[in-house]
Image (tube, rainbow, N blue to C red; front, side, top):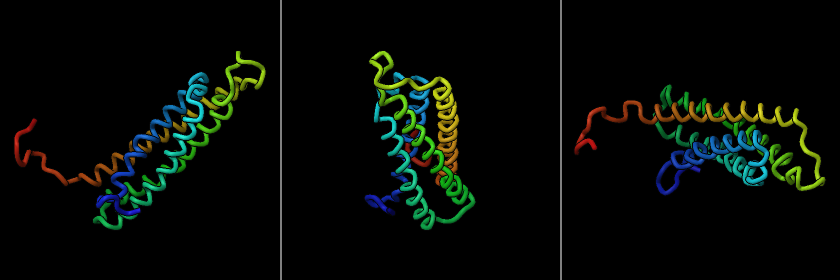
Length: 168
C-alpha cells in the first residue's frame, strides 16, 4: 500500500495505530483489573486489540514505502527503527486481551450459576500485572514512535514566525 487518494498511506494509517493501540491497552488494563468490565465489553476487547494489531504491519509497510520516497535523514531512520518495534507490543496486547476475554469476559458472573468455575485470584493478579506491563510498554512505544515521526516530518519544516495572516 503506497498512496490513498494521492496521499502517502502511512500518513493516514498511522491514525489507526495512534488511537487503537493505546485504547486497546487501556481497555485491557481495565478489563484485567475489573472483571465486570470484561464481561460488559465481551468480544469487543479482543476484536479491538486485533484491529490494532493488524493496523501495525499495514502502517509499517506503508511507512517503508514512504521512507524510500523521502530524503533519508537520521530522524527518518530513527523513526523507522522505532516503528519496527511496535508489533510485539501490539501482539502482546492482543494475546492478553484474548486471554482476559476467554477467562473472564465470556463467562457469566459468578452469581449467575455454576456453569463455570471462577478464575483463581493468583491467575487474575498475574493477568492484571502482566496486562499493566504490556499496556504501558505499548503506550510508551507508540508515544516514542509518534514523537520521532513528528520530528522527522516537521524538523526545519516550518517557520517559527507567522508567514502571513494574523495569529489567532
